[in-house]
Amino acid sequence: MSFVATLKKKWGFSKTVATLPAGMRIYAIGDIHGRADLLEDLLTQISRDAANGTVDDMRLIFLGDYVDRGWESRAVLERLTTLSLPPLKTVFLMGNHEEAFLNFLADPQFLDNWRQYGGLETLHSYGLKDLTFRAETSYLQQVHAEFQNALPAAHLTFLKALPLSYEAGDYFFAHAGVRPGIPLAEQSPRDLCWIREEFLTSKVDFGKRIVHGHCPEEEPQVRENRIGIDTGAYITGRLTAVVLEGTDVRFLQTG
Image 1: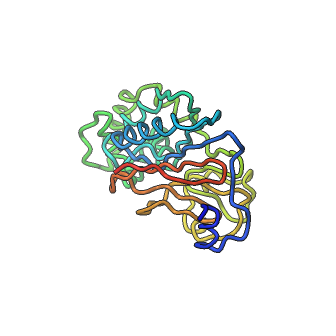
Image 2: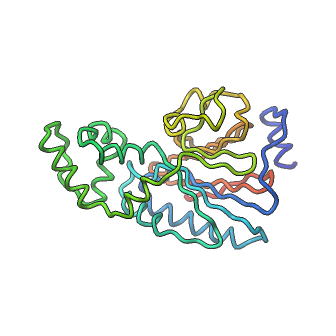
Image 3: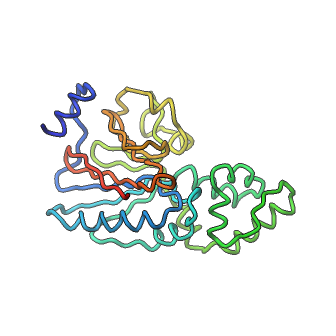
């Protein structure tokens, strides 16, 4: 049974399944969260996969959440800021954890929020050791100053330049998803990075099929209107990439 027929049988699809233009293949990687080891494994798989076939236009899209929770956020950013995998063209999107990273750089008081998202693990990866959190202004300013000194300029430049979304063919890529009822061109930065239930439970046609991360599941989630590929890498050891070509959808995964 074809992929299209399988989806129609499983989910009751009634409309044409999303497609990419002929000659294009896209790899999209879900939430990495400081797992440099899994990133390297998956990049090796993607490079091997990309060597097969005669596709002229191959793109590699990262859906955000490169940092926090795992212990190697610095190593992940170092890899991404220097990444070159020809003939793959790379696209890096903003996740809510990158937003939190930048929020702390803008305001030391934000550490109390960021640490709840795994920010202390990120600080540790940059060599900061005194991370027994205290609310005192002097402590927050000290951590802030140490982090600024430890952060390579290339990492900051990379994070500040991250776009919120990307489109190709019948697909729209964003970290968290989109708000139902709002045109894709009018989606808010907050929703693109943070939305959850309103998006996940919606069965409406968003105009394009959304490829997203942000909400971890044990397996990739394939729906008529979306594909979710956050498989909780920092906990499960499974970092997932979806491979899109024509109407075909398949997956590469670590672990």
